[in-house]
Each structure stands twice: as C-alpha cells, then as structure tokens.
Amino acid sequence: MWSNDEFLGDGEERAASCLELFATVPGAKDWQKKLAELSKTTVLPAASELTLSAFSLIRGGDLFERTGAKIAKTPASLLETYADKQLRLVKNGAAKEEQEAAMRGVLRVLRGNAALVKRMLIAKPVSVVIIPKDHDYRPYGFPRNTNPNAAGIFWNSAKTDVALLGLREELILEKAHLMVHEMTHAVHFLAFTKKEREDIDRFLLPVYRNRRWVDEAVAIYAERAFGARYAEEELRQPDLYGKTRRDWNDQQVFSKFIAELMRP
Image 1 (cartoon, rainbow, N blue to C red):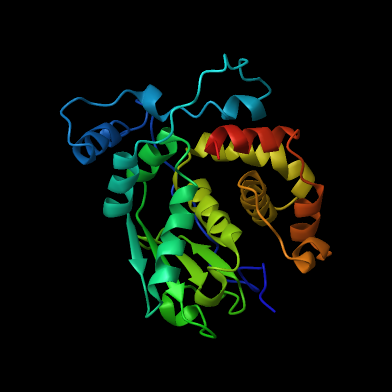
Image 2: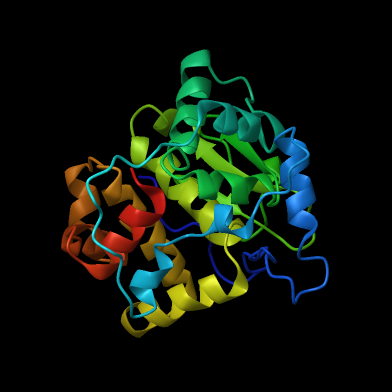
C-alpha cells in the first residue's frame, strides 16, 4: 500500500525558495531581466504581470464579480518555454506513455494562470524524477528521511540549485491527481513570496495546527479543484488526507482561493 506521508521521522526540513519581487529588496528587479530574456523581448515586464488576485480572498477581502468575459489561458508558447527552460524529465527507463502523462499532469497545474507560469520561469528549476517500480526514492537524490513507500514526493533544499519532484512509475497512469498534488507543492514552495506563504499559513494553521499539514492541505485542495477521482480507500483514510478530501466543497474560502489561483 502506497503512503501519502512523504517524510518519516527527523531530518532536513523541506525548504521554501521564496521569490523576491519588490523594489525594496536588493536584487528584486533581477527577475524582470530574467523573464524578458526568457520571453525573448527587450521590454521589461511589469510587476502586474505576476499579480495573483487569489490572495485577496484569504487576506480578508474579496474578488470583484467577474463580468462573464472568458479568462485567457496561458499561451502555449509560454508553457512550452517553461517546460524547455525550467523543467527536466528524468525518465529512468519509464515507458513513453508514463513520460508523457507525467509531464502533461505537471504542466496542467500551470496552464490556467499565466502569472504562475511567469513566476515559475524565474523560480528554481524542477527535475521531474520518475521512480522505477518498487525502487526507493533515496538513491535518486531524495533525502534520507524520505518515506520509501510514498506515492510521490516534492523536495527542495536551500543547499541545491534544483528542486526534485518524484513520481512512482506504476502510479502515474492510475492516479492523475498525483501530478497535481506534487506540482502544487512546487508552486507553493517556489513561486510565492515570503508574505504570500505567511498569508496561507495564517489562514490554514488554526485548522491544521502544523505547517507540514498546511503544505498537504494546499495540495489536496488543488487535487479537488482539478476534479480528482479517488479510490474508495483514499476517501476512507482516518488521517487528515482522508478528512480533507472528504470535507472539501467548492464554496469554502480556500477552495475559491485555489480555483482563482490555478483556474483549472
């Protein structure tokens, strides 16, 4: 039986690599040059291009009622640039079908919001590592406290230049929500500012009590937003994974936050 728990016991904590997007922080404007270079333009992007309106919902505000105009999806060229420049697939002998499903599932998380793609373009790169059937994660670069039975893992350390997103080969086709879960971790740990992460903590910590559970709740809410289809045992689990999946509904404030953030 595969486990939802990504880590066991003590060990190095998964780190956030927060974005610095504001002029008051030294080097904050470097992102404009990097994004312009990746976009092959001489025009520096405005900060408004990276605005995430969803955060107004959990800061005690609200979104203006939409006029009914269709929200533009991420341009295919922008998503392709991200996949080419910032995402690396480590195949480890996986079949083509699993390779394609893994990448398609990961990129699905970004497809609805161009601001998220632009943020991930200037964030730390991610290696998507397909773990061969029955193999342990740890020989593939994951830390010693990784749960060898985990279904998937997102790992980031301040000591490395690349984050790791691990997926079990045998679960990729079976559990489409696995890619959503792990890529949402990547967004949460790499694409937000320190204040934005604090806003999420402030909103969810009173319920989940522990930052590790906050991390998991964010990813589970994304699973649900993307229409996850769970096996019966996943819904029956007595822990917070099962409870959060069972209790979710689309009218909760945090559900609306995720829907606005990712626009599935």
